[in-house]
Amino acid sequence: MIVAVLLGAMSLGACVDDNESASVTAVRTAKAEQLKSIAAMNNAEASAKAILAAADAALKNAQAEAEKAKAAYDNAQAEIAKKQIELIELQKAEQTIENQKKQAELEQQLSNLEVTKKANEQKLAQIAANMKQAETETQAALLRSQLALKQAEQELLDYDKQLAEAATQAEKDKLLQERQELQNLASTYSITVNNLISAQSMLSMYKQNLVYVEANLVTMEESKKQAIIDNNNTISLNEMKIAKYKLYANYTQDLTTLSNKISELDAEQERLWDEYIVANNAFYAMNVDVEASTKATNDIQKDKFYQFAVNCQYMDADGNLQPIEFCIGQYLPASYYTRSGKWYSYKGEEYTQLRTFGDSIGVDFPKSSDFVTDIRVVENAVNDYIDMVNGWSTSNKEQLKLYQAVYNGKATKDMYDSNLEAVACRNAVDSTAYLKTAYNAATDATEKADLYQRYKNALDKETFWKNQIDNYTNRLADNDVLISRVKDQWDMYQKFDANKLVLQAKMDKRNEQNVEEYKSKVAAWIVSMDKSEAYNACYTELTAAQTIYYGNNGDKGASELASDIKDLEEENARLKKDNEDISNITSQQETIAGWKNRITAQEAVVKAKEVAVANAKADLDAAMPKE
Image (cartoon, rainbow, N blue to C red):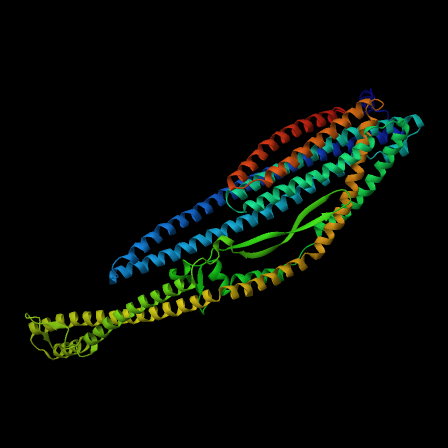
């Protein structure tokens, strides 16, 4: 058996002749390097496992944050509905001063709840953006592990120095045979590890998509679209593999010709691999300057109408934010800020891939939330609110007039006799001054003490009335501010559609800036994908040829290849059926159930891949020298 020969060649004695040949020394040195390569392959596998474990932990944290934010959002929504009912009941009741105060308090509470709801809505959007960024970083880290795995595999198969030092043709033939067998084992291990990484990565994305749907971070339609994209990417890759495998499924030529083909493909895949590494490193090393689009995003989020329409907040002239008055806020159409990755499509000769670069921002106004209230109803609500505030001002002015009279005016109606007749009296300022003068003039100790106490009491009253004047003066000023604010908000409401167009133009410009910023990065990705496609196509064909070559004159190899083709075709059929089922989904509950089913199925796939990796690793370890 080839493995037995390989083991014999690798098992070197502990004692070495000082005069051993150069070829033996080269073999000994090479074996040590091969052990390092095996360790590097194992490290790459362990690294990928650690990366995915960290990603899974981060996803669980994000899920917990999303659940918390969604619960706060739902609670605010429920409280809003509850308090709206309370407000309606108050509006039906007799409009007393006390009733109006309660209405004002309720409207303030409702405005605050709207802000809370919007804040948690924004938090959910940020969580979604963070999850997208984390997924991108995870995929990049996994690719680095796969690159390290491939590099270690290449180094493991570096027999050039040994072949150059070989003294005889017999030694060269044995080394070539050893290299071929080791290549088969190393390739099998590398392929199974990559398959496991891909399966685990897919499982991670499925779990992430489930979090998106459960927390309402994406719409049902967006979730369906993503699921179909994932399936179609896998289908495209599988179809490429099937096409390459079928080139060798009915192979009838002699093994010498096939061996030459393998050597040709092996050299070609090494060349393509080197080109891919250069292109891929250039792609990942390229930094993107997003200063312009970031500034534009910040400016948009500080926009007065943006705060009004999206966050239910009013920005005053000083840039301070307050909740929108409920008389308008209750009629605003639902809206939410969106930030999603910008999709780019790679369409190669063999398969198609989709990827996001940069992002697009927007404000979504669901059709179900279009203005359904006659604008005259809103106008009446605004006028009622203004009338209510003016009513407060009228009452405040009357109180202020009285307090001013008591403080330093003609306070003829402040005090009453036993018959409830008005009695003229001094105002607070005059009374304090009078008592102060009397106190200073008094000489009798008892009288002086009495006047001092009366003076202190009068001073307290004067201070009290002065505070009341300040309080009601401030109330009147606050009422003026309320009316000014609601009029400004009413103006924005009336011009809602025009303001939307202006805001959209700002966001379009910002999104165009972001596209321009990522233009070079996207171009580098296309180059990298071209190199990747060329390498994958060659590597897949090489794998098919090796499967035939190492399979007892084609019988076992062809059978194995046919089995692989069947598995790929069955997977594609399942994915196409899954796409049909996804297209027919009509509810969020069905979407959630669909992702849960995919997760369960993918977990089984991962377990099978783990077994395959363990077996391939054991076979490769068995072929290596034990020291």
